[in-house]
Image (cartoon, rainbow, N blue to C red; front, top):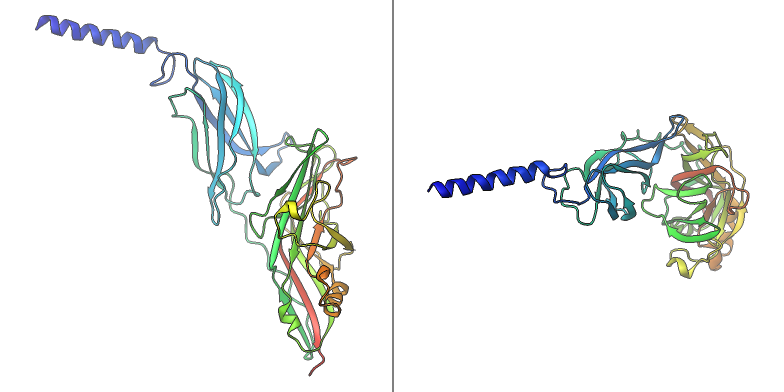
Amino acid sequence: MTGTIRRRALSLALALSVALAAPPGVGLAADEPDLKLEDVRMFASADGQVSESVVQFKVTNVGSADSVDWTGRLEVTGPPPVPEPGEPFTVEKLEKNGGVFQGRLPLPAPCDGTVIRFWVQAPGETNFDDNTVEGLKLCPNKPPPPPAPAPAEVGSDTHELEFAPSALRSMSRNTYGRVHRGPYDDSRHPDQMWVGWDAFSYLYDFRVSQMAVNFDLTRLLQVNRPLVTHAHLSFIEHEQEWADRYGDRTDVLGCVARLDFATNDWRLPPRQFMSSDFLFRGRYLTDGFIPHTQTAGEPGRLQRWRAFDVTSHVLRQLAYRDDPELWFGYVLRGGVDNPEGALGACMSRVSRPTLWVTYVDLSN
């Protein structure tokens, strides 16, 4: 009996000595990485400007072995409607005993009460106590946008139709080291279309984004003898990245600069309707805006209501109803499509594109 007690005491003493000699971290085996994820928040520049779409984070290897090819992922879990799982990323090496990696990742859309789950993991790691940040709300919910401008008053013989989009698509292309990458389909939500360009990012040298929209005019075509007197395409621009050549915020009227009419069916898979040197096929329609601009919000979060006059195009559609090239909708483009000479950024999120048509029914 005494021998058994002594053997058990000796075993306990050996276990304690091993535990005391082990490297920091509960449950760690000898010489393994141990990642710690912290400081997950919206990126802030040196002058205090907080980004709406870039998350910064810090990862420290507190283990006793280098971490090789460790991975991570940022997942958007709320609010509805659709969670975004995000793409995993890999970092080649993080040195042991306090090696630090500070990184940034883009959100799929501007932060609006966005809740995330963010995790990191290294090969051979067994202690995951500090590897995950879950249920983190990155920013407050944005206030609802002001109501759209009221339609113009019309006479008793005049009618006005409001058309919501029947199809929407947002596409972008990046340039890095003079090599075009993409196109990328950014069509995640009807109120999260992108138009503009960006030459001030750590992710790429240059990015250009455009959007296309179409409307089903069946209600107008059902009118026996419509005389269209006015038509305009309105939308809301939300400030995303308005910056000068030094990266400082600058105020612009908007980033949508030109309206084309699309000349092929952009609802198809991208490779069937586009090439590497453009996003949407189209012909110039107008770059003149009607006096419709209204502004809301504060600098850094401005919203502007803008509109193109499209009366001439709607009249052509009614006059040449069998011409398919007139019925593919519209393309909203920014002022810069080419990285040569591009400085700064002018990128907007576009929401609520709406076609308004005023007409007189001559059959009455």
